[in-house]
Image (tube, rainbow, N blue to C red; front, top):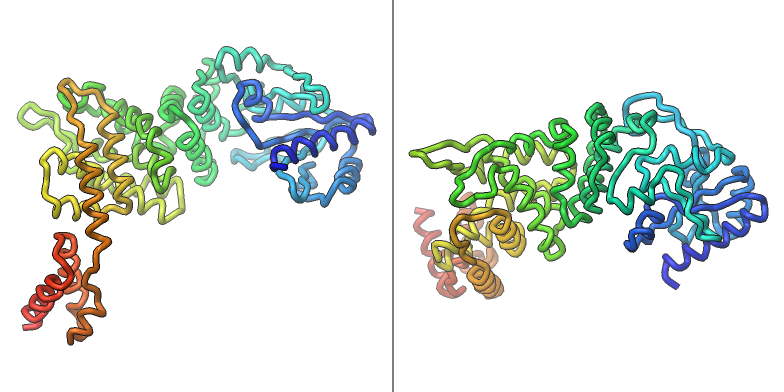
Length: 452
């Protein structure tokens, strides 16, 4: 039996036991929303009403090994199951941070007040586990039908700043519009107290789960909420581009189009989150180096001048050094594939490019997304075939025997201060397609010359 089926069966068993004691159990949150949207969601959350905490613990102890995931907050689990089990809670704000709340378990609060602490009406829906009855106190079903995100309570929504990002994230994942009154509340909420971990988590959901991740940022722009966490992206608004190559308008528009185009290649990449971050950040440099030269809008060297901006942005939202390195690498070289393809450059040049890339295949994919994320006034050339052919050449080249340090030592060369430089020379010969025997001779000759 799959985990989902096991969880569903256990939820019903819990509901039956709770009912015997006069209580009720409801599916809550995303599971109900996604079920009504006919979207698969195997994350099951249930909420137990009408019995005391010790009674729920007794029931769970009788069904398996109880896990206390937050016993004082009425949150439990069962070993071997992934269903989340909670009791209704009241919250009292005591600060500005995401965790600055005091929580109190209140099993008899009732479904309306329990649902009122949810963020959006579509997430405030509840479903009776045993009967399937939908409990909808705030018009969530209608908002689902109209594809609208609307806050549940104006009195409590602003207490949690993370809801601003959650709203933008849901809008992008479900292609929903955010109600104007909810946008107005979001405009008043500061995001400065949020932790980078919470921001990264919402950003990751938008970039990895949405078919239109651009809606995440368009929503934040509408709310006036880009500056605190995405200032480098905000700086792209109004930065002009050469209309011959970018009829879509400013760099913001281009970036949003690239982001959505990148979705088609997201799952092919070796690092989907890093890949989507590259699509987001690749043109940050245009904000600082775009200028008009001889009547033409140019952004020379934006791929390198933007690296400090990208680095600052990435360190603001994540602590993962490998992720940061991946994005910086692909951003630095994102112009190369299409440039070399347009020039029909040599095998040596494309080999050198692929060797510099942290993931050659991902580099081609990000270049393709960059190419698709624009509107050209002229017919757009297709470079895809050339690049994949050259990648095959590169991979075949790298699979052949090549000169290594031990080969040089066996030939009589002793490691010294210039050894790294000599190995780099041997590597250049490898990229040029020189066979190992010839490369060894040339490298030894080079080493002898350098020693003198």
